[in-house]
Length: 228
Ligand SMILES: [Zn+2]
Image (cartoon, rainbow, N blue to C red; front, top):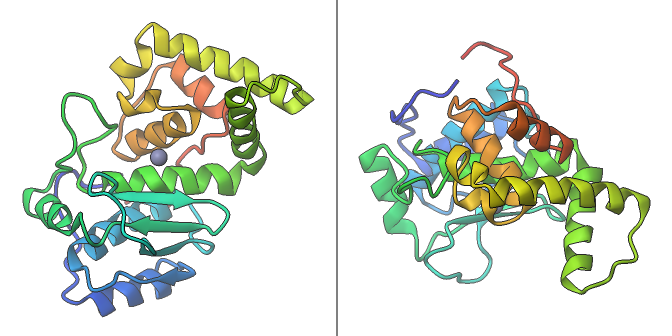
């Protein structure tokens, strides 16, 4: 399990961090764009993931191609398997997270953990969702689109997923997700999955009800493989 509130990686240069991510952590491609704070946070989160049995060989990390608003810190996009991070309007915040040793955006249960590497844990939650349970993750995405466009001509898989959505909605309405996971876990089933993943990476335990929903929606169960 990750060390709490301690920046344990202290790469001196971005090049060294990129080399480590590719050669030791096995990523497909890494471009930290000169951002040493982000490079250290990211490598720490990636190491946590690797220690939990996650294969990182399909993952690419690079800054956003286009400028994004300052409130967007990072994002994962499954078709390109790219984790993008905000290297323009958020650079100050990455430095602050490293300085303070906590994720500064965390306040009153907004997000699943206060670990400095939380943001990357969350995005890795999307990566493993699509990597290990593609069918369920994709079905949830398609169903979301159908619901938004009021198309109720559902396939069998989508009907099953609809049942999962209803259970999710009930846990949202009775405040279970707010209380146990985070406010952000209410932003849709994919965010719920990423938040529960990030919480587990910070050593959190959840009720059976939350864990059952997480598994049924295709959430990945981190395994402690090499005891770190
Ligand atoms: Zn997310």
